[in-house]
Amino acid sequence: MKHRGTIPSIVALTLLFAGTAASAQTVTELHTYPIGSGAWSGIRAPQAMAQGRDGNLYSTIANNGTGTSVDGTVYKITTTGTLSEVYSFCSLTGCDDGNDPEGGVALGLDGNLYGTTKIGGKDGAGTIFKVTPTGTLTTLYSFTNSTDDSAPIYRVVLGQDGNFYGISEAEYNGQYGAFFRISASGVFKELADFDYTNGSLPNLPTQGTDLNFYGTAQQGGDNGTNCGVIYKATTGGKITVLHNFAGYPTDGCRPISVLVQGTDGDFYGTTYSGGVSAADGNGNGTIFKISPSGVYTVLHSFTYGVSGSTNIYDAQLPQAGLTLGTDGNFYGVGGNGGMTNYGAIFKVTPSGAESVLYSFCNKTCTSFSPATPLVLHTNGDFYGNSNGNSLGGAVFYSLNVGFKPLIDLVTWTGKVGATVQILGQGFTGATGVSFNGTAAKFVNSSDTYMTATVPAGATTGTVTVTTFTSTLKSNHSFLVEPQVKSFTPTSGIVGTSVTITGVSLTQATAVTIGGKAATFKVNSDTSVTATVPAGAKTGAAISIKTAGGTAGFGKFVVIPEVTSFTPTSGAVGTSVTITGNSFTAATKVTFGGVAATSYKVINDAHVDALVPTGAVTGPVAVTTAGGTGTSTTSFTVTP
Image (cartoon, rainbow, N blue to C red; front, side, top):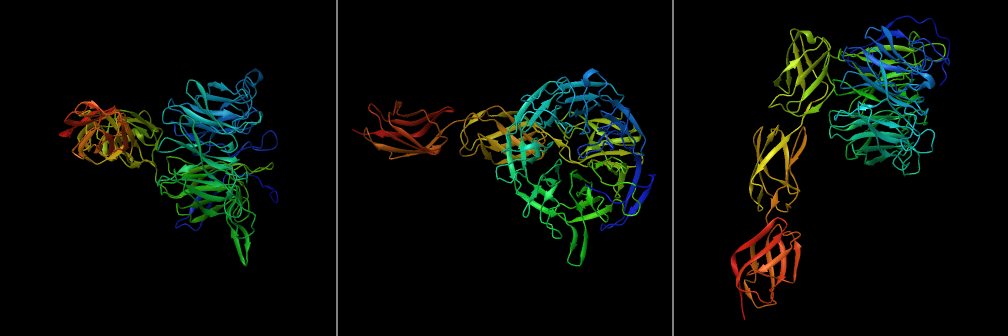
C-alpha cells in the first residue's frame, strides 16, 4: 500500500475524534516503534497482544523494533507505553530457539506466555515456544515440515482443557495446513490436515462455548472461487466446512483474521476483500456472522470512495478481525480507509450497523495503517498497533470509548470446586467474588491477578469482583459445567420415573435417556426427576444439558413392555401383532415360553410374529438387550 506525503517527527499525541457514536472516542498514542531492520517496524496483522498477570500487555515483533535482535523479540508494554524487551530470538546457534515471531503470544494457566515463530528451530520450519514474563524461553516443539506442516504465523490459543491449539501454514511442502494440539510441557499432536476443499492457509481458530473450535481459511474451498472457508474443528480433529466464501459481488473473500464469539453465540469476523462496494465496486471487504450450525449472514460491505455526489470514508481492507466490547458490539480496524485512507477504527453492532470511530492521519500524521487486533484491557480501554511504513508511523495506541473497568477470565468453564484465574485491577482491595450471584472463596494474589473457587450452587453467568470502591464484572459468562453422579432406578420401562442426582443441575434445559429427549422436573441444584421417553434404547448414558454444558453418566437399561396383542387366540401359524414399547433390536419372541421362529420388528412399538409349533397357552414375551417384557394376559393356543 502506498502513502502520500512525508512523515513529520513523531511525538506523543492525544487525538479526539467525534464519530457517529453517541459519545466521543479518545485515541492516545503511547509509544512509537522505531523502524528496524528491513526498513519497517516489524508490526504485522497477526500479532495479538495478551494481558499478563501483572496487568501489562505482551506480544511479539518480527524484527529489532523492540530490541537488539533482527530476528524478532517478545516484548512487554505497560498501558502507559513503557516498553521493555522480554526475549530476543535467534540467541542460540542456528536459531534453534526460533526466528520471525509473527503471531503475538497467549497467556497460559501457569502465567507464562506461549507463541510461535515462523522459521528457525532444529529444522528451520518454525517453533512453538514458552517464555516466562522475566525472559526464560523454552522451545516446546520444532516443526519438521512433514505432516505437521510448517511456518506458523499465528500464536497458539489456550483451550479450556489446559492444552494449546494452533495452526501451521504449510509453506514449504505443498500441503495446505494443519490443526494441532500441544500441552504446556510440549507434548505435540497433529489433529488434522487441511486438504484445500476444507481450506488452505488456515487462520487461528477460536474456541466456542460448545468447546469446539471455529476458524477461517484464507483460500481453498469447493466452490471454485478460492476465496476461503469457515470451518469447525473438534478437539479430536474433525474438520467440518460451515461456509464457502463466494467473493464479489455477493460475498466476502479471503478472510485473514480470527473469529470472535458474540453474546448471542454466533461468530463474527471480517474478510479482506469481496462484498458489495457501492462506491467503487472493487470489493473492500466484509463483516459477517455465522452460527455454530452454519447459518451465514453478510452484515456489512466496506465502501470507500465517491458514490454519486457523496464521499464515503469507511474503513477498508481489514486484516485484524473484531474484538467484543462490554456493550455487546464489536470493534476493529481497517488498514486503509477513513478520512485520508490511512486506516480507521470502526464499531459494528451484531445486526450490522457499522460506524467509523477514528480516522488515522486525519489531523496530524504521526500514526497510520493500524495492523494488529484490538485487545480490550481490563481497565476498559482498547489497545492496538499501527505498522506505518519505512518513514515511521508505527505506534502503540489506546482507544477509550467510555467502558468501565472489568475483569477477564483466563478460564471460563469449569465444575464446582474448580479454580478460576481472573485478571483485572484493584484486587488488593477485593471484598468478594461471586458467580452469577453466588459468593465464592478467593485469593487475591496481587493487585492485578486473583483466583476464585467455583462455589456449590453457582450457575452459569457473570463473574463479579467487588472491592471497597468498585464493582468489576466479567465480559464473558462463566460456564458452570453440570455433573451427573448417579440415577435410580437403573432400569425400567417407558414411563418410569428416574431420579438423577448430581451437581449444578439448576439450569437444566434438556434431559436425555436412551438417546431420546425426556420430560423432566428440576427438584434442586442436585436433583432432577425425568420420565423414560418412548423410543429410549438400552446402552446410552443419561445426560443433562444446562447453560454450562452437558454431562452424562452410566447406562440406563430400557426394559421392553408388552401392552397388548391381537388376536388374543389362534392356532399354530397365526400371525399376531404385538404392541408395546422398546422393541427395537428384539432378539426373541415367545408364546407361553416357546420361541417363535418367525418374527419381525416393525418399529419400536410393534412386532409381528407367527405362533410357533409347540406353543402353549400363556403370556407373550419380547426379549431385547434390555431384558424381557411379558404380557399380563395370556395368548390362547387353539387346536
